[in-house]
Amino acid sequence: MTRSLLVLVFVAGAHAQSLWSPLLTVATGQEKTDKDFIQGAWRCVTFEKQGKVNKGPFIGEKWVFKDKDVIVYHKDEIRGQGTFVLDPEKKPKTITITGTGGDIRGMTVLGIYRIEKNTLTLCNGFEERPKEFSGAGKPLLLTFERMKSE
Figure: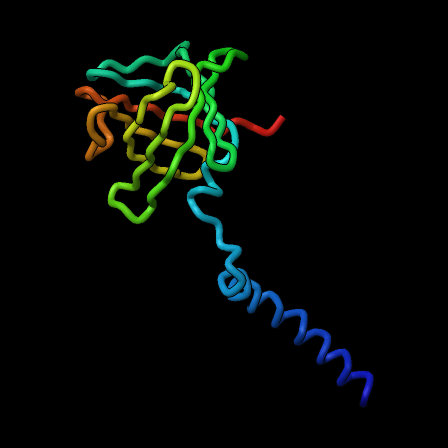
């Protein structure tokens, strides 16, 4: 009798863990945020400016987000560096990039973003923040695919 009770407790405990683990993740603050999801290397697959879609090659075809920094590459050459801040509470979500080096040194890029699975969409302006995802006017509309880890 004692042995069957021990097995029952073990089985119940194993199932209880799977039921409680999502709650524990939220309770311990380990929930992933947009800042977590944007981390890593992204390859630009389309670039739209003034209504014209370009599929490459681009100057700045690879963007790498690491912690609060972003580095823009052309081939293996760094073309721009900066820091970024996301505001996922805004509608649409916003990104502000402050240029610290390269082609964007001293510039502030005002953008909106969305992350859907392995696709990152940025719509960036320099004079004002875009209100919608469109490359029809001054804003630049960029679509990225997540690059596989090397």
